[in-house]
Length: 252
Image (cartoon, rainbow, N blue to C red):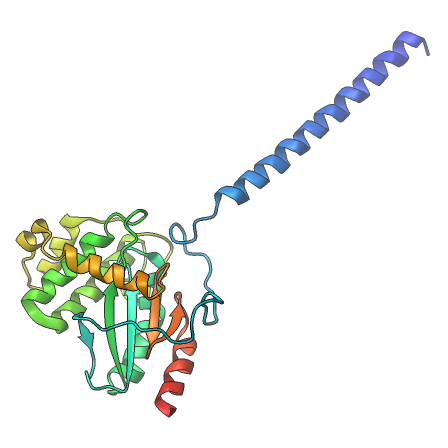
């Protein structure tokens, strides 16, 4: 084989290896970029859920989180109080409602063992309708009391499920439902309440913001966040996680 032919083969071989190396570097770079950019667990598709009670290691075992003047579901003299700080547009909050809330209601709220309090913690930077939804529910409460509030609470999550392409009661929850003031007014109207002027006025904006401030002071960093007789529980936990804490409080 001539020296010229040998040199040509070497050049071809070097070119192939260089091409393979460049492709490998591009693939690795894209993988690193994807992992680095996908760091927002509070929105988007709902793909996983921690099955155990969570909380930052530095979080105290019990904190002060007040009922304030927020709507109560159940017997106001019940021995156990669950306070939820939540966001009506948050998919994980809706996941708690579809998978866990109704069982808690059936076993503990309806039997007089637990009273449930919903407080607002809208993550407005990623859920633009969350604050309006919170204000809308408060507008309904103004007209119909706590019972009406929880009808609107359920209605918002039901309609969110439908917008998300799922069953209005059971889901499944896939991602963030998109809605706004027009839909909120309609949903309230479906329940028999005209909240147009109340919602447009922003009458309950300060109330919602106070809930958010109180939640942040109590250590809430994401939604949903719960306090069961002051004991924190974070995330869309399964019923078993709530049962464990509630039963311990009832036995104390």
